Length: 285
Ligand SMILES: NC(=O)c1ccc[n+]([C@@H]2O[C@H](COP(=O)([O-])OP(=O)(O)OC[C@H]3O[C@@H](n4cnc5c(N)ncnc54)[C@H](OP(=O)(O)O)[C@@H]3O)[C@@H](O)[C@H]2O)c1
Image (cartoon, rainbow, N blue to C red; front, side, top):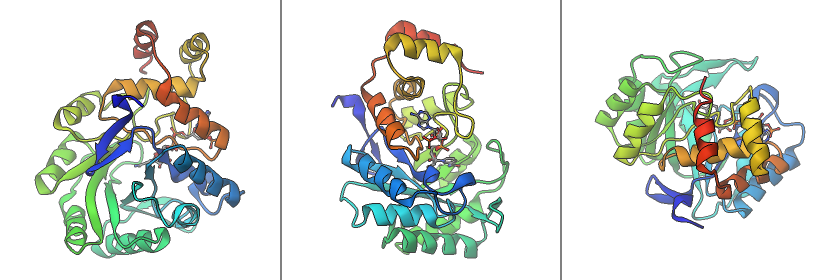
């Protein structure tokens, strides 16, 4: 293992290649998966391979993903950091709706605790919902105060923020310690470049969601060509590029497949020569 393999998250040393559990519920991140045993197996393999940072939320399923995490991994290894998020709810058709009232936030914390089987949530991201596609300005003080209250009461140990603009992140940092920022970022979507550099300078982890492109996985002839030259898979190259983009980037690629999980974790040791990096740097949309 080299020095670039780990990073500090909320006071814990975690491997930079973690795992995002969103894909473990059913189609559309709604309802149960077709093969629950396979979902359990993916989580157990991730931890067996050294993953000690798992991203989840009780609004995946809803409830289903957290229940699978608990079934697969509880009692949890001492070094495992489970990060969850609060701020959305699902309606009966699976639509994603904002859920920022004090009642909704408290209930979401209780749901996460119960379904994960925990006494305390180690890290909770306040997931902002001002625009479905991209971070957008909007008031964050009221919901963040509720999370801070839950932190004082011991339900939550650390607070992060997700789908947030630089201004909202600065405001949140003025109200409490923010231990991580989780926004969409990948080879083709780099709106957060300046933010990542600032957070790196401040020692705050940046955790890109959709590291592989999310619901439309990355497709690029140039990415395929670089991967073919390196004898690697395109998604491994996409992850290796993120690991080299900044030392504060922690990865949580999502997969429901053991084969993909193993491929993704192997990206930690993929070397990207300077000419490959230069080529990948030009890929941004
Ligand atoms: N804060 C937020 O608002 C937010 C939003 C979205 C996601 N997240 C978190 O971020 C995590 C990552 O995002 P994501 O799962 O949406 O997207 P992602 O990691 O960018 O991509 C996941 C997609 O890529 C496929 N995939 C994974 N590994 C692959 C491989 N080696 N080769 C080919 N295809 C591969 C998966 O399909 P298979 O299942 O077939 O492998 C899935 O369709 C989530 O799991 C979740 O924990 C947070």
